[in-house]
Length: 205
Image (cartoon, rainbow, N blue to C red; front, side, top):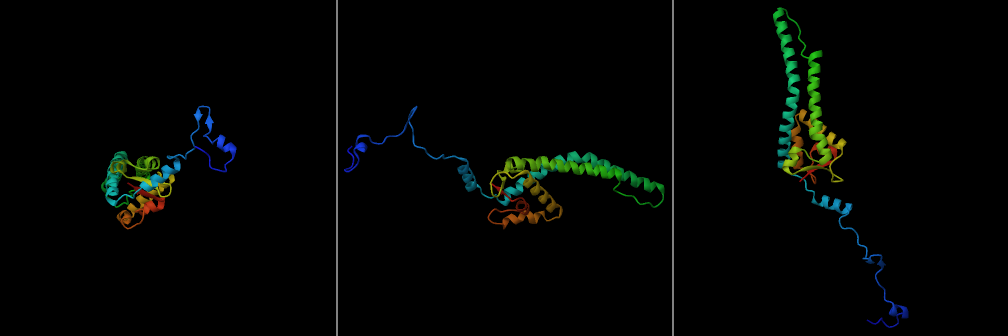
């Protein structure tokens, strides 16, 4: 092909060529398609808040599993404390005089303390650590949902997972856990419950 009129003589004789490397012509540089930022953007675009039905089923599974483990671990200590209390009551009855029987003493406080410690340790091992590591517990994995940080869309940190679990447990103790769970029906856009808001997380499908 001939060069356009008025072009320099050297341009006509030596048309530009692709740079040549040691292994042959070097291909033009192209930006990576699957870099970290692109993957993060795809993950955020694909994240959809999970519905209440899946969350309830996952919570039911986790409650049954964790309740069974906690009950098996705490039962010997609770049973020992109850047996001690019954023995004190029977001793007071046989004495024939009116006496005050304390249900909490040095023996029962230790027994109940060990049982409570077992509940906390199992909760950390079953709820907090898996959520911080993979974003899901056994129940959430079975239902195809996971907990994500609301900004990074990655599994939450250990601190956020712990805060989420503690707030959920305290709300249940205050008998407002149902209101907490139902809150995601009205919350937009991430359908967060109160414990999600405390940890800055959401549950994704």
